[in-house]
Image (cartoon, rainbow, N blue to C red):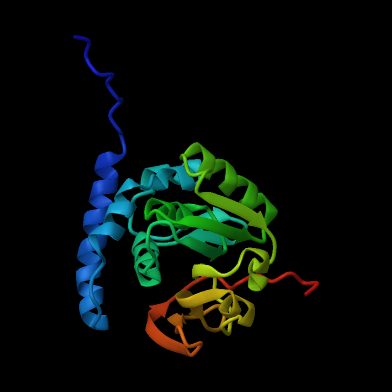
Length: 232
């Protein structure tokens, strides 16, 4: 009887495991302070399967699994893994859902969402970042689950709406009405809102089945500002 084919060991598996352990420890403290349930095993599992090192610049790959944000060029960052996990959990998606992401950046948040079993449509306004994220997502094996669109994410993707969740990875100074309008009933918009250059509030905005809108502040965060198309 022939032996099954052997797969090459993952040289980054230990680094990812250590990152997930650090995120879990960080979450225990943070969730207690916020008075919220901790991250679910599903979210932590998705974080542990996503190859973050494929979404950072080559010169930063040695620190890819630190629980810190990192620069990715064009004035943008790849978010801290804990914040990625927190926002993923706050969406409360189910496998098979379709999610709109505003601000593709590196593509890492979209990849984590894909690991949760959802289909992601992501918008990036910086063409060079969109092209790089599209390439890196394909290399990492997510091309069938994540579609990267170029454009002004403030307007969303009305032709593909409604969405089972909307996540925004840059901070406007208010909740964009077009994104709220593209939420399916019972779904959630997770978004940092506040002035640029300072701290913002991470909000969960829920559209109830009857159309009523509820807003909940989760915690303070710090994101780059949401870039708009100057012609709009």
